[in-house]
Image (cartoon, rainbow, N blue to C red):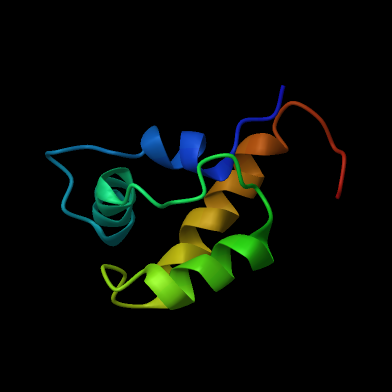
Length: 80
């Protein structure tokens, strides 16, 4: 079963990693309104543009989402 973007993002949380994506993961964890079941790029992007004041740049989300897609496509080659 596909994991949501949030579930994938939580695997990137690392208190010893102060990189942009790890910081995003930690802040998303603290964001109780984060759409935890959502996997759609546009829906997540819209949420973060309105609520992601902890995200210094949307390019960090883009990078994390690209990692999510790569991770999800390891098991199969379905697109969509």
